[in-house]
Amino acid sequence: MDIKLISIVAAAFAVSFGAIGPALAEGRSVAAGLDAIARQPEAAGTISRTLFVGLAMIETTAIYCLVIALLLLFANPYVG
Amino acid sequence: MESSPLSDTILAHLGPVEISRQVVTTWVIMFVLTLASWLVTRRLRERPGSEHSVIEMAVMAFTDHISGIVGKDARALLPLLGTLLTFLVVANLSGILPGVKAPTAKLETPAALAATVFVSVHYFGVRAQGFFGYLASFARPKAIMLPLNLLSEITRTFSLSVRLFGNVMSGEFVIALIVALAGLFVPIPFMALEILLGLVQAYIFTVLATVFIGAAIDTAGRS
Image (cartoon, rainbow over all chains, first blue to last red; front, side, top):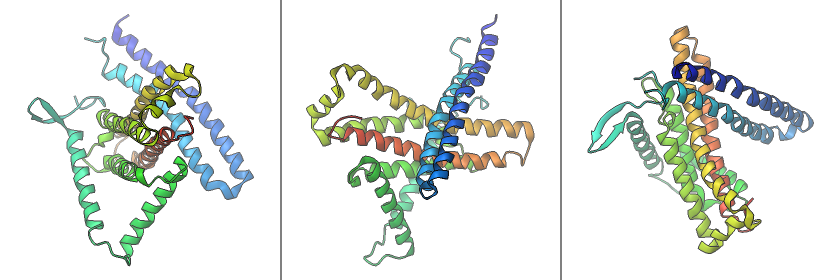
């Protein structure tokens, strides 16, 4: 197979499988955050701030996969 | 090749150094921030006026916040971290101006900021614990943790820069794709999301820098 074709398929795989883990993790963390807010509504400010930071950290793993995919598509070192 | 999010637009050459577009944007942001800070703090009086009070409240809230993270009085860290936050907010939001690309959407600017954080972590660590005390803190809690601690110094700096770069760059890339696919008014909600994301990423970068510095100046040992 051509190296370009392999790169395109690999980029699609990187983004699709790289989105699964962060999606599950973000779902769990939002559920836990909502649970905590329901138990302690007076701490909602602190909880949601921490939640946002955590969500952004989790989302970073998906962003890493996107960066890899964009590297494969636009800055592939193996394509002449 | 403007279509690739990883390529640079070179505007000018300064000897062998290429002046790319995001460098010029960074210079403009630096100039505007410096001018704004000078204008705001030009006439400080004992009895604060209205804009003076607003700025003082913001500075006090930020100082309290980073002091809460570090766990002690963090007034010495305020110049570095406050400048980081202000610059990152302006830089991330500058991408929504028409014709301006956010400088943080290219890898160089986040890498430079992460390198600044890397150096200042060791600077504040040495200043708080002494040179040998700081070196010894890498071998805590056990000497076997030494390679892991050294590795985490490098990987966390790398992930700090790639996190900011990836988020801002992917946001701009998605907006460009939607403009190309769907037309004029469809990307507006995505741009609103991008504003929120830029603010959150600026906050996260600053908070992580605070956490790293706080761990370095914590004389009780590394967390």
